[in-house]
Length: 73
Ligand SMILES: [Zn+2]
Image (cartoon, rainbow, N blue to C red):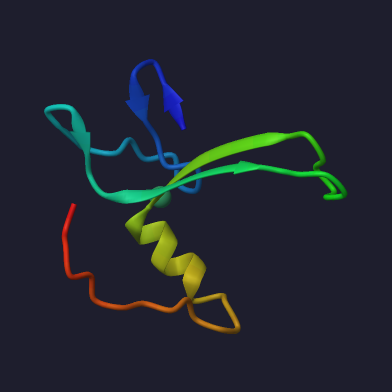
């Protein structure tokens, strides 16, 4: 989440480090819930640091698919 020009992990509340205009890599999610969903018409946005993401993924029954990228952004 962005608060006072700082990006903060929604899970642990830690401020993400910034180098110039870029923040340390993290998961940024924007979800616009659609018709017939429980949250119909709600837009949701969150930032998750890599440490919290790893902990979260350990709770998954099926691990996310991961693969090597050929071009780095
Ligand atoms: Zn975190």
